[in-house]
Length: 131
Image (cartoon, rainbow, N blue to C red):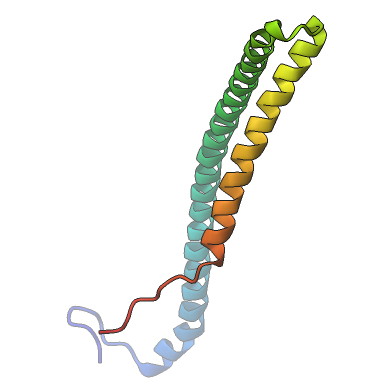
C-alpha cells in the first residue's frame, strides 16, 4: 500500500530500491553502534579518571597517616624508655627497652585482634529461614 500523498509507484521500482534501502539501513545501524561505543569509551575513561584521582588521594592520606602513626610510636617508645631511668641501665639500653616494650604491646594487641577475627570467621553464619 502506498502512503497518502505519495505518488503511486509500481512494485518493480520498490524491489529495485530495496537493496539500496537495506544497505543504507545497515550503514546507519553501524554508524549508530559506532557512536554508542565511542560514547561508552568516553564515559568509561571519565569514570576511571575519577576513580584514579580518588585512589591517589586515598593513598596519599594513608601514607600521611602511616607516617604520623610511626612518629607517635617512636614517641611512645622514647617515653617508655625514659620511664626506665630508675632501673640503672645505660641510656641506649633504656631506649631499646622502650622500643621492645612498645613492640610487645603492639604484638599482643595485634594477636588478640587476629584471634578474635579468626574465631569470628570460624563461627557459622546463621541463615535466615524462609518464612
